[in-house]
Length: 348
Image 1: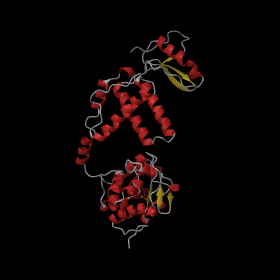
Image 2: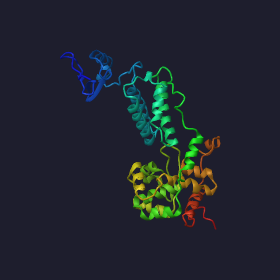
Image 3: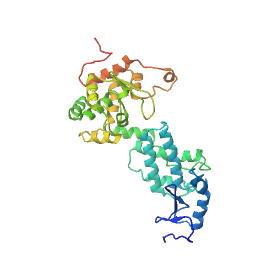
Image 4: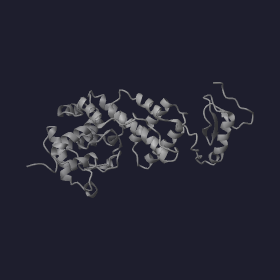
């Protein structure tokens, strides 16, 4: 395309090398009109937003003519606000952001929202070929949440048509895929080998993963104030559900040497994979669920994991799970490791 040129000296907008008409207002660059649009179209957009921008107000964006870039910006702004309010965890926001970027790159930032239809969703789905069914399910769900938001917020006059293929993989497909994969379960020997080679910080993370069902984000965010005696009480960042777990003396010793744990979720995963195991750090949480289940107290195990027990009103009415029940889970895991029970539920 030929470079943009100002139509006259006093024209208030500046041509950008990428084909946009721009203007810097209060230190921030703003674009007006679509890419390679005429000076008149850009000037019209400037006049519509001028008063709001000059007065530090968010300009009102007209529904007609919204591009995918506009829709993604509006959606991510709403997710960012939820993140700041604590209604959304960082991991979920990162998933939204990544999928929005992929959608923009595949469909094109300047495509009109109203023109998006079944063929575009078929194209999106084709780029997911070969991915695990649960990964496809997550990505399809994010895209559907995006367009549901745009419709319910009034940025689309009617729901989009996804076509017949842009659906979540069936439960059967997901089950068959999981069955074909190795179990996400550690053996006692693997745990002992990891603990032997781990740094003080990673050793503390491993204990929290095994006895408290902590994932990568949990160990990155937990603070000293969440520990009291042999107990850790900490809400699950993803859901806000309160959790409580008993920790054996070995875990407390490791935590004392490592606190405060100063790391990130990504760093936890990266450092763990460097220890020579084929399983991820999150497989410790799977091990907690599997081995802890031997205590035959699913309600207590759900409390440790931060899961909602059952579908009835009992989960709403239940106000506590006693420490002896929670400790019994820890005792079972401790015995599985080849250590005698050391907590409140010690059997005589």
